[in-house]
Image 1 (cartoon, each protein chain N blue to C red):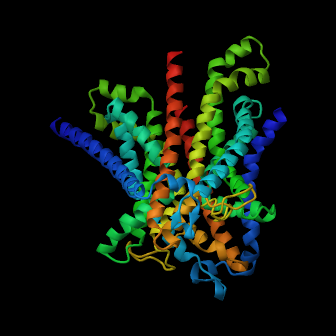
Image 2: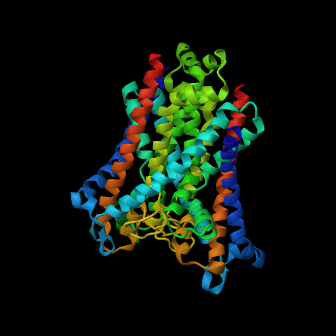
Image 3: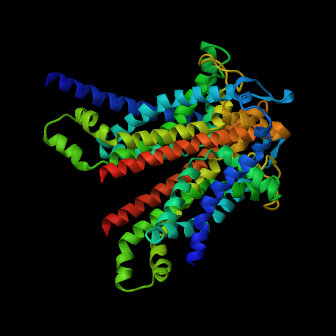
Length: 281
Length: 276
């Protein structure tokens, strides 16, 4: 009994120390970035385009390019994931084998490394479809990459809405599609939004998938057929390829981390709000 | 409406199919022409027409095994703490922090590794850009996701297991060690297998901290190149057979990762079947 107690104490201590140490180390890394990145941060950094290969000026054109790249990817992914999620959620019993097959494809797609998406995008969108190095080509590649994420997010939203209202709609003999458009989708909207925002963060963080498809041009893009360097790729280029670019890489990292963390905090707030609403009802 | 929905559902399957088709078509001419053994026992020297991938395979194996060996136990430990030890407030904060850390871009971790970690390793043994740096950065990167996935797995266990153990007067750790972990083991392995897949596919961070030397690493202080950074480094200027060899590298990674994912899916199904 004594030995058992000692073991319990040791285990408790071990788990506290390990977990706190892990979190502290991870937060120290982020802290280091924030402190070093803060040095070059100014209003000018956001409104000036990069000059001298990024060693002076700011990141305005990259920010615009990255925003367009990412938002376009989400806009293309949204209808596809809505359709797929409806199929997976509403018709899984009717088309059992088909939906099972799609689910396995989604699992595989979710596991494909981003660099492989990059190769695929380079071949299909840039070369076969002739889009070259362009924002559109990068966006389409990103769409392929985030589809599993947005589909699963949309499906989960639909499922929880269906748990709550599905039976009522059936009892009132509302048609399946009528229920979907008028009841289930509006009810699921916040969690669908959370899923899309999560995917938005993933797109911002991505560099391997867009380096071969969206290119590395730093000029202000004028259309979606122009090449534009993604912000994450800019960090890589400043840290590795431009001598003396490290401080700029840190500043760009700070901007990117704040942007992505901001998006993820919104996701967490939406999810928290949904949980609370479900509990209250 | 239904047709539209079915078409969009089919699209995901089509994309994964197209990825395979394009990579295979791009590399097939090379694969048909040269001896398969050449990829294993020669050097990588595209100008001489030799495309040995072994140094990169070795580099990938070193980092991935090292990173998962560090991140998997730590991730599970954090998850155990989060589910059964931490007070409610701490565990909910921890979950949010982990989710936020999981969203941080790999280039940012790579930048930190390059500027902080590599110089420190350089003091111990030059050049600093090494397998060890890659292992560390990769472990740090997959830790948050590993912890979150394990957390979800452990939380999905029936509450009655812990309650029953407590009612019998079994200590918390003894219950975890002998009842809860064995019950969750299959799904935990599935979660770790997925992390192995992620570690193999990770590109930018290892590209920045590992030195990318074309050699088979003999210890953890040697610089090395992984399969993924190999593609990222050479794709921009490759053409002809060189390019085909790079697509072959991509196909190799795709094959490994797909196998891992299907294995993990199979594990999950088997577990669900047993639980029924």
